[in-house]
Length: 283
Image 1: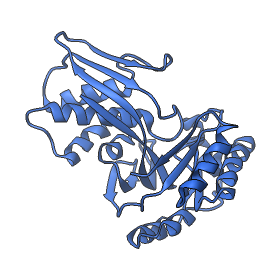
Image 2 (image 1 turned 180 degrees about the horizontal axis):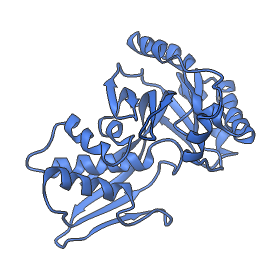
Image 3 (image 1 turned 135 degrees about the horizontal axis):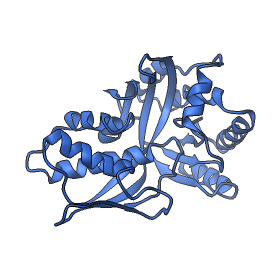
Image 4 (image 1 turned 120 degrees about the horizontal axis):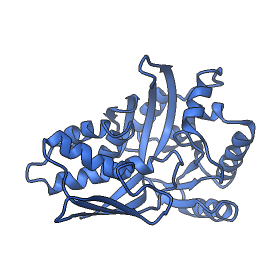
């Protein structure tokens, strides 16, 4: 089975508090985009679970979230692990705050569910995704949604009006655990207007959503990291983006465009500086 794994963006992202279990309570609006990995999921006649990708540094065993998803699916269905070959053509940037690994895991869950003679409904499938990672339940369902708790408490929202998106990942890594530690020790400058963004979605107001986009993890970046993200966001706005923000724990920044020609111009400019720049749409 050939199946796509769509990337996600955070239109808003707020960290509310640290929980007794070590996780953080979040409140964020998630959005799927057309940028996607391609997965081929093939049953094997012998009992082997293997993962192949076009990136040599990604794990090809049970440490890969795609393999973890298969194991958790069989565990939830009460069946023994089976032979399965998972081949992933990666297009979503790695460690970019776009849920690339989680989306691959969700795609494996959807594929196995479609192959199952007694498939689960999407919500039950998303619950299995909770055992794999916090973003996996959203990636199972996709679209536009409010995510709360660790990210597993999902409320579908009216779809974001279809628009063009330019996504740009600067060439430096960000440690997600370090970023969470830092956000616990700083005073946030501002918070996203998630409630206002939801109202704008209900009204079909793309510009209203774009104006309210913000990600509190931008406050936890180092000075140099923040400068680089700000440079990308400013270039997106100069080219006509209705709004720009950082996705997830970053460092990827993105802009929403109503006009294709303006999005193309932004893509061309940023592509000259950052290799991992993408021109795509919301879905």
